[in-house]
Image (tube, rainbow, N blue to C red; front, side):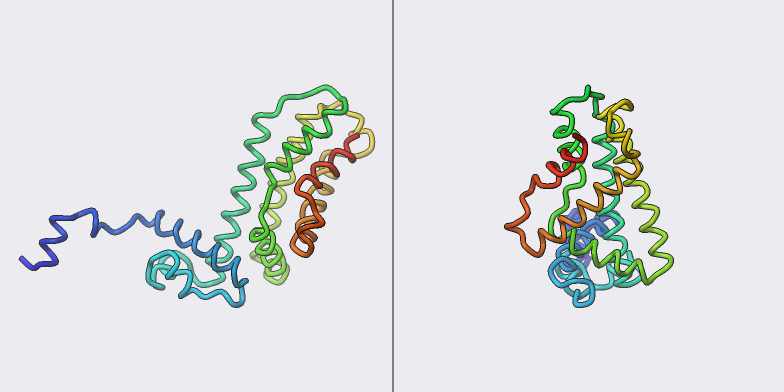
Amino acid sequence: MTEQTRRRETYPDRYKRPRRSKVRRKLLEAALIEFSKRGYDKASLDEVAAIAGFSKGAIYSNFTNKEGLFLSLMDQQIRERIEAVRAVCENLVPMEQGPDAAGVVGRQIVSALAADEAFQLLFLEYVAHAARTSEVHQELSDRRRDVRILIADAALAVLGSEHKLWERTTPAVFTIAILALSNGLGIERVATPDDIPEDMLAKLIGLMIQ
C-alpha cells in the first residue's frame, strides 16, 4: 500500500472530490469578486480559479468560457433578486389608502430590489453586452419581464385595486418607472455616492403614490 493510498483510506473526507454544485457555487462567488474588481474585459479566469481554490480547468468543466461564466453569474444575481421580489409579494397585506401607504410600498419594493455598487456596475456591463448579442438579449428580456410582473403584482397587492394611483397609470407603467428610477439612482450613486441617500428611491416612490 502506498503512502498516498494509506492517507486516502485514513482521511477519506480530506481527499473527497467536492460536489459539482459546490464547485460551481464557489466559482460564481469568486467570479463576483473578480468581475466586480476588474470589470469584464480585465477579469482573469486564472484569478477566479485562484480565489475559488481550484484549478483553471474547473472553470471550463462548469462553464464554456469567460463569457459563459459572466452570463451565469449575472443570471444568478438577477434570479436572486426575482426571488426576493417574489418573497415580498407573498407577505404583502392589502392596506387602505393613506399617508403610510406610500412609504410602506416604497420600502417593501426597494428592500427587494436593493443592489450594491458591485452588482450595479456588473449589471450595466451585462446590459451593454446583451445589446450586442441576440441570444443574451433574449435572456435579459425574459428576466426583466419576470421582474416587472412581480413588482407590478406587489404594488397592486399592497395598494389595492382601488388606489387613486391606478386612475393615472397602470401597475405595468408604474413598475417601469420604479425600475428606471432604481437603475438611474444606482448610476448616480456610483458617480457621487454622498449625494444619493439610501432612502431616496423609497421617498420618490412615495411621492409617485401620493
